[in-house]
Image (cartoon, rainbow over all chains, first blue to last red; front, side):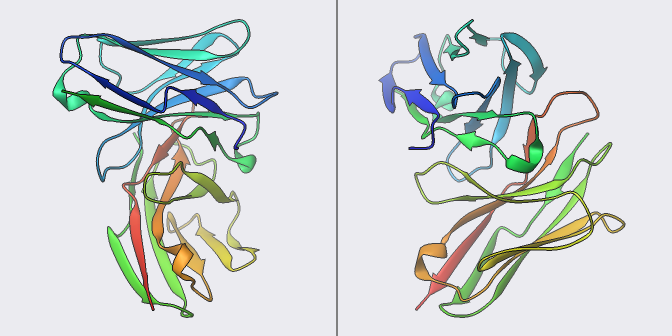
Length: 113
Length: 112
């Protein structure tokens, strides 16, 4: 157990639907990051939150949104889903130093059919 | 922006040594990180280099040359369990964010 909890582990949904992915960061970490990993691809940065506020944005589609709540858990909302959104979605958390690295959750595998 | 290049695939024999290279371009350098990811698993942090030179952690070492915008991950005494993808990463930009930009990954296959 890395300390970062992601739910659900698997999600199968139809095109056009909306889903919510949930992430609880490691205890003490204020930063949460969301990444998308398509089949055999690298990790694409979506968005970062720090202590409840959006800190950085990557190539996140307008159909996607996220937020971080006062208890520091974060949710990634994906709407109007398309087949191409099928991917592994990872959440990671970190402290204040890059030297300690990110701690990743086990990911949510989203399949859009 | 930031970009990283690493080989897509490397094959080596069990017990051997393998080096995975990474070249990067970034506006403002704040260190080079390495992550390991087994198929279907989560990436795990391996190492971080902020200064030039070699950092050793057990069988794994990581090297950085800031003047060449280059680093590598060295894996010694390869074991079958080292078969995985390895990603290098740099901090994305000069802002206060700690977001990491990852390379496309190097798939390492260790053969018996």
